[in-house]
Image 1 (spheres, helix red, strand yellow):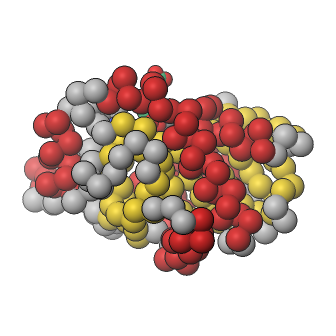
Image 2: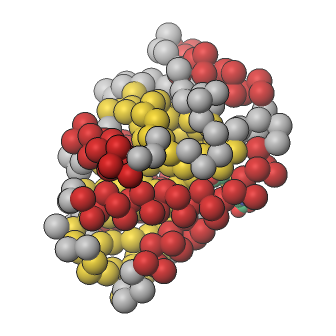
Length: 229
Ligand code: SAH
């Protein structure tokens, strides 16, 4: 089976390249795709660069160009739910683009005509993630992930995301990847480890915990692969 593992930043994909060093590389559209056989899969690895546009291009490339049949996003996020602390793992049960606003026409925030505010993640992959977490004896939070093209670092914006979208975590790629996978009918799982709390200290926390949280997320994906997608 061909599995795509996508991240946004180099730091998020590095742990995988260290785990699976016998890769070949292909450049498409300004990004490098790392191709490797490991854990019984053909794995396509890449970091897209930050944001919804870059991640949509990479997810599309992994599916349409490289033939990925399932996709896992691995990376870090800002925690919105008070239950989520730095290093905790979260999977999305559904995702939204919080920065879509055509409310001038009477639509709800996040809504795009012929689409919907929320995109549901794949229940089977999420169930697998929960089983793996249980077997590893670690906590795994399942909730709403809100994505947009901003780094959230204020109590005010954080409160708005919770109140408006019921969001548990915020990041900059999940919903765009979810949209691509949903439209191309590819099962996906968006996994994040918390790097910061999207508050006034988010930038400092992010810089401190990016690498360790990225590793926590990557180690968990490895366990999912070993369990069998
Ligand atoms: N420090 C980086 C920029 C990081 S942007 C640089 O200067 O290059 C934040 C990245 O981590 C995005 O890919 C996003 O998905 C995730 N993220 C982590 N915490 C976030 C937060 N509080 N708000 C939005 N995105 C966050």
